[in-house]
Image (cartoon, rainbow, N blue to C red; front, side):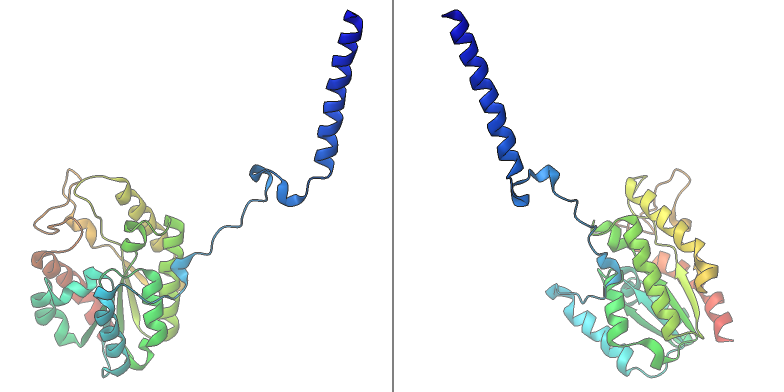
Length: 257
């Protein structure tokens, strides 16, 4: 009797294995466990694809800068960027009025812009018709600061903006500023920005622009940012805008000559 029971257990076990193997042989591709599915291809880098801003609070400014680029008379110097560039009309208004406006400068900065937004504006209203002798670009902090792109993606976006500007204004002197440091003290974001700046500087000779490091002057000996220059450790004070204008003026004047 014991032998019979043992043999029956072996038979049931064998039948179970056979049923499992048969089921596996007839499984459809859609029934494969998720871990066996092919790995999806990397998503497209949105930092290099022109895209307008859609947040309501900035639409008026975006439209104004497109209008300026499309309708303004010839501009000797064109500034492109995000809130730090737009700030020439706020905290930097006096420095702009005293130093840059007399040189024939036009401000096309839009707060919150990322590389894809600048590309869109250049697509809507190319700066070619302005015939600038000098173009000043500061862009990239929002690609990283908003967490929308990796360092590599942000770099690709910045370089795409540079290539577009070179195509639209090939005779202009192009000054590409290092993205300014942000955050009161050492932090991972500072490291990403430093690596981005290094990579952008490495392309200067190849793509035909001058890399300009100005933000370092606002970093103190202990690595902290001076609140007298960056009150919120991102945007500039009037004092910092004055220093920025003084640093840029000789390079701009050289381009105008």
